[in-house]
Length: 134
Image 1 (cartoon, one colour):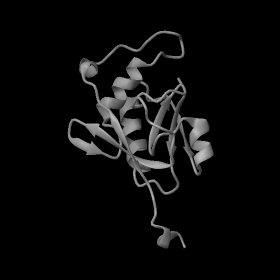
Image 2 (cartoon, rainbow, N blue to C red; image 1 turned 90 degrees about the vertical axis):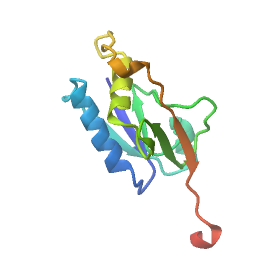
Image 3 (tube, rainbow, N blue to C red; image 1 turned 180 degrees about the vertical axis):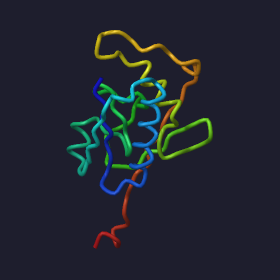
């Protein structure tokens, strides 16, 4: 299983998503599974990566929290969790995504009891006022 975290430069939720991912991997019995973090710095790279907001978790190149119709963008991303809106998916949401992904041996990890819940994310544009950019 290949896992990658995609973020924009200076993403305020990078540490949160990395910690949530570590906890989810441990909880799913995958504590030896490593992940990488990659910074997406421009729109072209966002389009090539299918990046729809920061942070994004890719599992084997697929975004398990993707929203239909979302466009690639260099933006912040907000996730809907059981506790409300958050800057990263909750640990149980990530575990659910890990369990739903085929493992490296071609099987599928067993689903968790919470696998019937559907969570989604919302991309929020990360923009600067033109006066701030000048």
